[in-house]
Image (cartoon, rainbow, N blue to C red; front, side, top):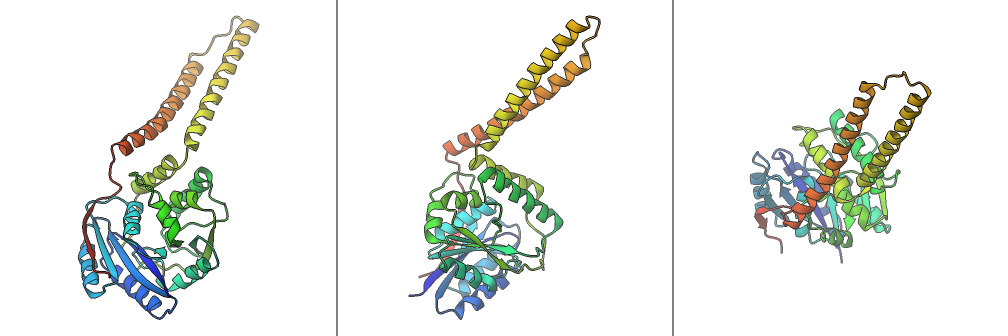
Length: 311
């Protein structure tokens, strides 16, 4: 019996592109005897008429499910919403702008059939903007240092994952989802496959510096305690440095009683130590704040409307 592949696509400002992405998926999978497919389109409160386009696609094709979020919750929350509506044995995630070619999905599915749990697309030449590439490099460093990602593993928004991994990811119900962190804590049986990457034909990336910072905070505060350990190490280093400097000052005064103990050096040390204390308290406060919000059962996402005519 053929396997069902669920395509989960977060949509934001994609009224002009999502139809082409859906058509490419259909053309690619309809000629396959090994796989059936369904498509879950999650509108992340896009300010344009994206959901109206999704509604039209749902009316034309029974294999499409449209989910409309009540406000903008972010790409990862939209993915989690889509996962809950996915029925497939395999889930494939890709972008709504056509830059991640759906025609390359057989490569990802083939590597899954080799026994891997997750397969990420790897681009030899990325066609993103310089800002987006910078964000990707920072995200790469953060996941490697904070989350223990293998150095050789390339992460992207285009990936295929087996059903049992998604079921494990859905156990996470807190309001700060980070899909990469959920994948890495569920399995290490992950690989890459090379695919091409297209130029963006319409619009610009929906990621701003604010959204990227929020994404990185999600990653290292929700799935790692290393920032707290770094804060402890810096605090210990500062304390030792202050103690040694105090001994140095006493010895210098004993050796040369006429030396004037500098006011500027004292203020410099106080400002440095005070700044580090405030920084560490801020990190601790971020963790505590997220715990508080999670205990208040803040929603991961809120669905305004769902169009689902699948059998």
